[in-house]
Image (cartoon, rainbow, N blue to C red; front, side, top):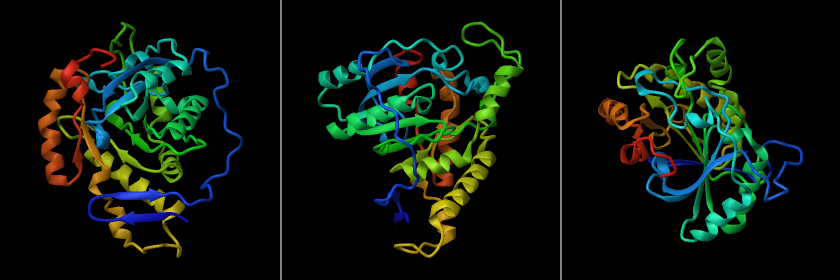
Length: 305
């Protein structure tokens, strides 16, 4: 049974004491000096979604199931972890040292790439964060369900819609040319709604960050996805006669605006700026939330900032 708390401004899903899903013994990191699939560990200010403005320790993993290309919006802003993935160069001890060097920062964010591909790393981080009372966020496209011994505090989910599919014959950031294999790889893992539902039911909290182009062509796809996601949540955990506080189904299906953070497409200041106005105006009229991408506006393509 899920306990749902709803008011006009937010939706919180609280896990019952009994685990929602049974799973085997979860893997952990045994050697803290072993090089892990991590390409960056640095401090920053969270620049997207409901935690924007909070100082955080960023842990960027390498490797991704997606090959996102947004046309005029450019390639994924961390293409060096996906299309041309760099090798890992950091250990878990590097994460611990970064925390020791910045004791005033009480948040950690796992991003990528696709961090949910690295179950042992994510699970180990939840143990460390639980011990130190650190707020954890994981940025994910939602393709993989991942159980952890301690829940992630916030799932920052950015589903990939059709505007993210690579165009055939386009140059990648390192000069190779997109082909059918790359496109098929991307589409194979796109929009795994069941996995997103399971992840939301398992962990504590979430928000959805759809990427919108300046022409807002993805709005219909986003709304269809939200319907499917809501139906899945109701089917797997929200329905039946076990409500603590019975809710109107239409209210659930309408979602709550604080969970939907529309994000403009763009991998440079220039391309991002073109999307800002149309997306902001849409959010104003729709009642969702708007999230800028402050790291790109402030530092453009500079890394580790």
